Length: 334
Image (cartoon, rainbow, N blue to C red):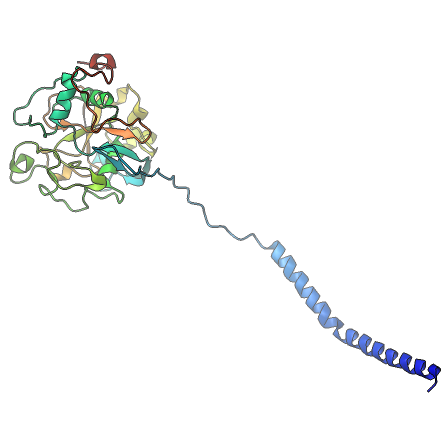
């Protein structure tokens, strides 16, 4: 075969292949177009669809963690949100609302006679009315006014707890009715009035740390003595308004040094040996005149912010020491 014939034959083969290819493409064009159109439509649908919904962020404020080590005599009360008050409570315990308190430190037990006597001897604190049967060194100090209680806490580098801090301390992380749970356990867990009499039949307060420890490592935060707190008293949370709600509430008049609406009444919390167990719940509250020194049912315990300077264990001034201003310099009556 001549070279000319070979060239013609090769050209023929190429022509046949080209025709076959064009035929294949022409036959597949509708399917290919359909595929391209489908992808385009899907893209347009995806572009016009609303964006995927992201999970809602948790807006609840986070409380600070308790420190790894604590000063002796102090417990750490973990902060957080909880429901204040009780639906079935007395009028001054309603309405309920969610509040938040920051983590803080609190005295493990009520201030004792021995603690307070050292403050008196150092010249910082007033000597309250003595009550026979209530003067043992480990019994809680009684007969103190709100001013006496606030002054003592200031001298030892602490402060009175707010009312909501006290409720958090008593109710614990689950907001239980009592510091040990929801069931009343008078006398085994709380020094209150029972059928046996006042103070579970003893007729007086008990030494601190006589009953089992409750939430956060605190003793007798239910019963034994009513404890002064920082807040002015309101006859209901509704009348207190925004000052008793939200984050770290300070109570009526937002904790101002003067509050005519309170009629000179401050809040006491925790119940006492004089009253039955129903007045020793974590949400029970009552008001009393701030200058009132008479009752042998009122005592105190102190609290401290996490950032407060560290002081000695259960810090009380020794005789002759000058850890703070003398009592009369604090502007308190005496």
